[in-house]
Image (spheres, rainbow, N blue to C red):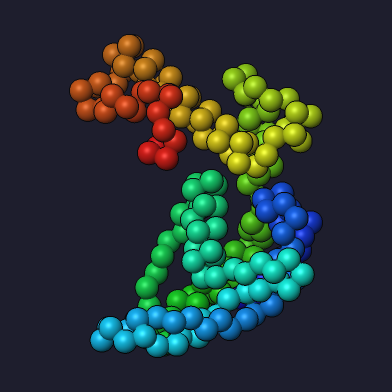
Length: 185
């Protein structure tokens, strides 16, 4: 909730259109919830609210957006569960030390989007030219990237099977189906 103010519209617009996350303010919303005894009680939950657009973002909205982006970009972060504040603080400190060590070595994290665009534009099976990519949405582009990967993997597997280099008895039939659902890949 505290970091949402730092999300600049020129960065978020490629994914979220004209939603200005920096205009959201922390807000406490009161809802009526049924407790374990079956009694109704008022509960205060934190949300984000934009007065200009009258848009509200709850924790459920955040979770949905995060899951959608994880699937779209095929990024699934390691989830660590901390039992207690001391363990949680220890995990945070360890991550800070790891990041500082990477930065000291000069390992600066770069955007993976440039390498994806470059690889796809130079691939003979990619249907978009560089200038056409400007008209393609990020979701459509990421879908094309994943489909191209599935196609290449399937083709390589079929060549290996036909050439006798791959034992097809140990491979699921869906593995060489390049038209399969990407959500199962």
